[in-house]
Structures are given as structure tokens and as C-alpha cells.
Image 1 (cartoon, rainbow, N blue to C red):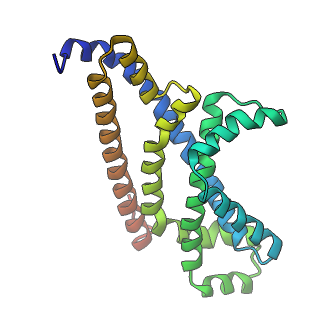
Image 2 (spheres, rainbow, N blue to C red; image 1 turned 90 degrees about the vertical axis):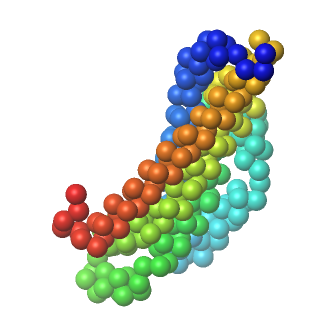
Length: 225
């Protein structure tokens, strides 16, 4: 029998539980990527040469090496230096670092797109750099780059199966275990593929709605609902 519905109903609860781990890894990894990316973008724009050069070198190094190597390095090599992390934490950090480097370029494009007059006006008003970034620059820089950040959210979500390489029981690893136990791989792998498809479409739709909301807010700051 090519497809067994009874087996599908049997393994679905297990896969749903594993999907929670996948979603957790995605959200935690993306929060780290979003925060780290913004920090790196600001550092790269620093007028202090060694700070901007160091941040740029870090971004290029992370972007130029495979995320799977980074996962292995954090999980297997860090313990040599006394840093022992659980598999889930190591995977989330690796995904966050990797996609944080990409997000930093998106943020940097948004920050550089803010008119220079905004910076000059903030200086003329004697605003501190912190207040300038928080209240003037970032609110203008972030909304235009939301679609690009959303693309990286979906991409990070689709990279979570790599965590199975360090034995994180996310969705793909669970599907492989179920297949090895029953010698039936069609159903679990197909269900996993369907889950990733549906969740990617849901995430893309959410990003479109968020982008539309932010655009309405920018056009009508006092009347957005």
C-alpha cells in the first residue's frame, strides 16, 4: 500500500508535538536574528573605524560560511572552550547568528535610506544619538524593510531541519525516526513537507498584512486602526 491513512492518523499527534519544537526554534532564532541584525547594522554605520570594520568582517564571515558548519561549531567545538550548550540552544544561536548577518544588511539599507535631513535636524535639536535612533531614525527605517525581513523569517523556518544534525527532535528528525521504526517514509515525509508549505504560506500572508498595516500607519499616523 503506497499510502496508509490509518498510519497517517497514528503519527499525526507525534508530528504535531514535534512541530511545536520547530516553531519555537524558528521564533527564537528570528528574534535573535532581528535584534542582532539591528545592532550589527548600527555598528557598521559607526564613525569609529575599527568598530565598523570589525562589524563588517563579522557579517561577511558569517554570511560566507554554511549554517550547518556554524551549528556544528557551536555544538561540538564550543565545549572545548568550556561552553557547553544544549542542542536546542546551540541550534537557535547558530540560526540567529547566521540570519542576523543577513538581516543586518537589510537594516543597513533601511537606515541609509532615511533622508540626511532627519539626521541633521536631530543634531540641530541637540538630541542624543540614542533618542535620534529610537524616536526618529528607526521608526522610518524599519517599515520599508519588513518584506525583506519576512523573507528571512520564512528562510530560517525552512532551515530548522538542519537542527536534526545535532539530534534536536524537531519535525524532520521526528519524521525520520517514525520512518525508521515503521519502514514507511512516504507518509511522515509528506506530512512534514505539507506542514512546511502551509506554515510558509501563513507566514508570507502575515508579513503582507503587517506591511500593509505599517504603510497605512505611515500615511495616516493618527488614524491607523
